[in-house]
Length: 314
Image: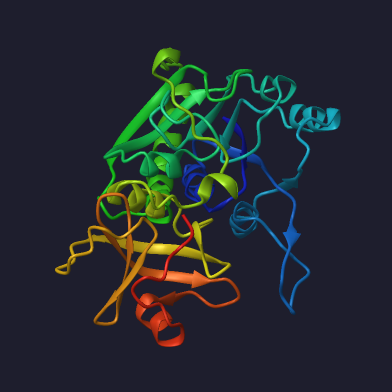
C-alpha cells in the first residue's frame, strides 16, 4: 500500500517511524513537511522540521511546502499515486489534495473527538482539568476535525502532568493507532462512527492573549493552566513591568494567616515563593523573567527581592 505521510513537529515523528517499520505492508512513497525555518545559530542558517530529520534518517523522499493550497501541490501528490494519505500535526489540507488518495486520507488528532477540535487539543484538555484524553484517527473532510472516526485510544492524565509530557506520551500511543488504522484500511475492514457535534468542544490556537495567567481564578484552575501551557509557550504574567513565564507550580497550604491577600500577591517563606489565587496559594517552582534564563524559584529569590506584599499583575 502506497503511503504519503504529512507532518512537521516532534509529535508526528513516532507515527512516521512506526509506519516506516512496517515496510513489508506499507511503502512510504513521500514525506511532506513544512519548510526549513530560520535558526538562531552560528553553525546553520536554517533548521529542518523534526519530521524532515526523521525522514532523512530513514532515507525517505521529502517534499517541503508551506502553502498547501497551491494547485501544483495537488498535482505533485497525484503523481505519487497514494493509496492513503496519513496526516499528523500538519496543515489543513484542501479537498484537491486529500482526495488524491484512492483509499482515503486520515488524520491523527490528539484528543478524543469531538472533544477539543482545533490546533491545541493537548493544552486545552489539561487547562480544562480533564482527567482523561486520548487520540483519534478520522477520515478527512472539508470541515476541520469533523470527519468520521476510525479508531480512538484513551489514556489518563496524571494530576501533575504537563502538556510537553502528555504530548510525548500521546505521540507514542498515536503511532500505534496510526499503524492499526492503516491495517484496517488495507484489509478493507474499517467501520467508522459519526462525530456528535453536540458534544464538540474547541481547542483554539494559543496566543499571547489566551496564555496570560488570571490570578483571580481558583488555585486548581491556575495550576491546570500553568501545566497545560508548559513548557511551551508557557503561561505568563508580569512582575514589576516585565513578562514572567511560569513553567511549574504546585497548590500549597500556608501556616500563616494570609486570607486577606489579594490575588496576585506574592509571599516568601523560608526561601520558597508563593502566589495568591482566588481561594488559596500556589507555590511557584520554576519560572523565567524577561531577559533572564529559566530558573528555580529559590534561585530567582536570591537575585530579586520579592517580599511579602509584592504582586504579580492580575
